Image (cartoon, rainbow, N blue to C red; front, side, top):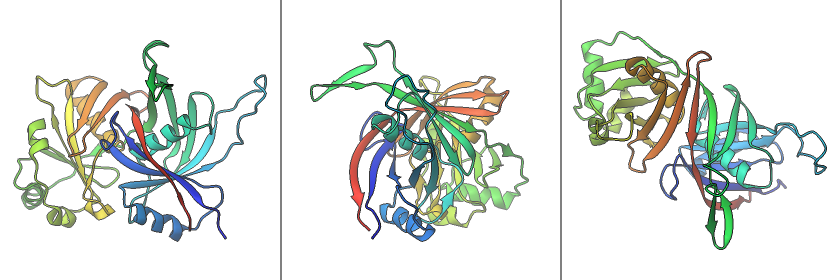
Length: 304
């Protein structure tokens, strides 16, 4: 009989429970077959369920011994398919590991379908600022920085019928630029952040569009603290809207960096759950540093 699998549900890219993007994080102590992994992801029915398998051994208890960076294999599943890259579930996995006794230090390496990705724990402010009190106990205040590859957007010739179909899928919203990401998502730029917020997506029409998903973005209002707004629609992946999509920002940030001539951004994902991302673009190495917080909301055990 297979061992029970412990899971944790984490809301990523938020400081508040029931905001941001939820992900189920499962720590596997033994191999499970592909059908089981996909079936459990469908059972959770979050935008992503991720699976961790430890590669390196736990750090030695002897403090004089050299501590190597902990490594875990990390896989991401939507309710219908495995994906190559996912930001919020990686943030959730790192939060789970940093807040448990499973790792020491401030750095984790994940072996993924997109290569080696790192997660770094960064404390907030000075030592006194980095602690908060909950239930009479001091809790660390930190955010997590993910080091991801950029996902370029490419020029694609869309004819007038294509543009009309995309606008129709957005319930008639005006579209000022359309590209495609190397992950096969349509990338649509709207006139403003307010337009992004006000979209009434037509999911039946979005399913008929080419590619896997539809990313929309627009400049934030001038009086906003943010640089741009975005939303991500993915009905072909088993969920209508991705509440906060880290991997989409691997395409969004290079686009806005070219337009705005800057590399540091505060981004707002304007889904009903909403989320905030602090982002730096490393132009030289074509990496995106995604920074965010997370909250653990649930723990349990899969018995089958």
